[in-house]
Length: 558
Image: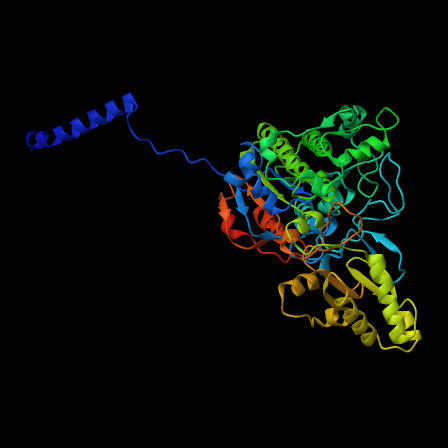
C-alpha cells in the first residue's frame, strides 16, 4: 500500500522544494505589513491669514513654490466655495467663527468694536480692564481677555476632554487674532506694537514661561531695522497687477524702508512693521519657539495639541493698497515662502504624517474704489458722520426731536429709545422712518430694523440671512445697514475696506492637509468657516463647541 502512494507524493515533494527555493531567494510575495494609522493627530495647526480673499489664492497659484500654498492646494482638501457666512465680515467676527463654529447672534462678537446699547460707550471686542499685558504697557481698552465671547472653542473643549493635558497655544500680530482663537482655556501671545515683543495677558498667565522670556530677550524684531521691502519676483511677474498710479501716492510704492525718526528701533518702527512681510515672519518664528518651548506635538500624555497662528499683515497691506496691487501680490508670494519653510520645520520636528494643517481667512477684500471706477464699476466711500447728521435732520423734521439717532456703530445705527419713550413716540415708527430714509441715502442697499430682526421678519434672501446671523439681540444696535456692492463705510481717497455680505468679502480659502485623515482634492461642495470646528471636533473625538452650527466636512475625511 505504501508503495502505491509514492508516485502521488512526488509532485508534493517537488512543490515543497520549489517553495523552499522561492523563500530562500526572496522571490515570494509576502503580505505587506499593515502600518497602523494614528487614531488622532499629535498636532493640529490652524492658520488664519488675515484679509486673504479666495480669489487671490487662485490668481497667483502658478507662482507659488512647491512647499507652501501649493502643498495645501495639491496635497490637501481645498474648498473653492467656502465662506465666512455672516454679514459683518471683519477680523474679530471671522476669527471667532473659526474655532467656535458659531455665528455672531450666538457668540456675541459682532464687530471689532461696537457701542454698548445701554451705556453708549465704546466696547472693544477683547477688552477687559481687569487684566493687563504681561510686562507691557496696557490701556483700559486694549484687548486682553475673551470676556465678550459667549461660547466655547475647540481648544476649550479639547482641554476639557483631556483634563487640561492638551496644550492650546495661539499667536498673532493682533490681540483679537490670538485671543479669539485661544478661547478661555488656551494661551494667546500677541505682537506688541510699542516694543515688538510677543506677550500674553494676566487673564491667562501670571508670568511668561522661560522660553518666552528667552525669545523676547534676543530682540529678534530689531533685525529688520533699515531693511527694505522690494518686489520678490521679476517685473514681468506683476504685469497683470493694477498700475500703482491708480491706487497709491508716489510715496506709498516700492521700495518701503523700515526705520524711525529716532534712528533706532522704537514704537514708530515696530508699528510700521505691521504693513510689511516681517511681522508674519516674526509670528512664524515665535510659533516655532512655542512648538519647542511647549513641546507641541509630543505631548507626554499622548494627547493632541493645538497651535493657532493668525498672520496679520496681509490685512494691513490690502487695506493700504487693495488686493489688485503689486504690493498685495508680492506680500502673498513672500507669505507662500514663509509657509513653505514653516511646513518643512513642522515635518522635521513633529512629522506632517502626525499633523493636521488647516488654513483659512477671517474675511476677504474688495478692490479699491479707485480701481473699481477705472473699470466702470459704481464704487464710493460712505462718510458715516455725514450720513448720521442727515439722518438726524430727517428724524427731527418728522418727529420734532433732535438726535434720535444716538450713535453709529458700523454697520449699525443706535436709536435713543429712552428719548423716544420720553417724547411719547412709537419705537416702530421711528425705526421705520429711519430705515426708509437710509434706503434712499447714496450707497445703501438694505436697512433692517430691530423690530424686523427680533421677529426674524427679513426678506428671504441670502444677504438678509447673513445679516440676521450677524445681529445679536443683546449687543447689536437698532438699524442694520448693507452697502451697495463695491461701496464701503470710510473716508479718504485711497485704500479699501471690508465688512459686507458680498462674495468678495465672504469667499475665503479653506484648505486642510493631513495625510492620514484628509482626502486630497479640490472640493466643489459649498462650505462655511463654521464647518471647521465640528470637523476638528469629530477628528479629535471631542464634543463640539457650545454654539457650533457648522457641518462635519465628511466628504473630505478618510
